[in-house]
Image (cartoon, rainbow, N blue to C red; front, side):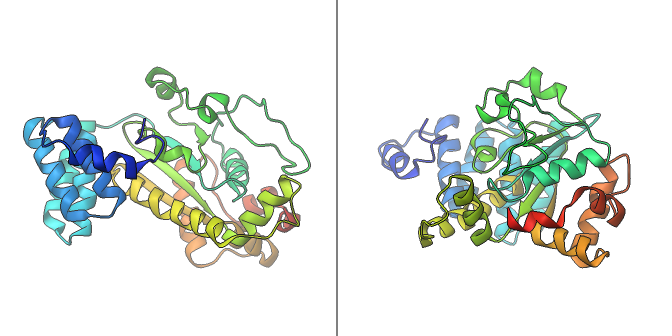
Length: 282
């Protein structure tokens, strides 16, 4: 419960009181070290854990990430290989759209739907003045009620899991595409206030820092998934491309990667069909 709630400072003294080398305790030490970016401590906990129980794909994935942080590229490649062998290959990937609320996650869902991918949505939250095309959510995801059989049924489809929900549960096994929406934090906060009818409320630095840190924490989270391909889309760049009539730079590379997963090519024509320049005001 402490881990799921992100109450790391309460977990630390509990771990300090025990010298247990049980696998569950070692994995908690690993998670705490990762949260603190203590790469040496994370490596030691992960190695001790896999020494006791070798078949732990997630721990080997964490080791690949940590070895990379420590500049141990050969060890990172080996750990990544162990992870992939344990996980095996899946027929279709899980596709996840993520980012802070009001960062453009619904826009990304529209884009992938236009590309021919089925959406995971129960349509309970319908379009309104804040999201003219709808929210494309599913209550089972919002309330974190998924289970393994239900998740398996969603392979090849795209589901929206906003921050911080994404790192509060294990990512599904096998290959996955994670589409990350980035938007200027100032714009995200202003949009959140507009939606809450609190536009006049001053923006606090703590809020700005919180969402910046969420990006850092989530990057660390999916960085430990060797079978995850991550594509970043910048909200402002999508709008600029439509106004300019041309896709350039990193956005062009990102859309080319998305096209591998879509039925249709994700290009400027598709962008123009989905992206409304009026979205700047939301």
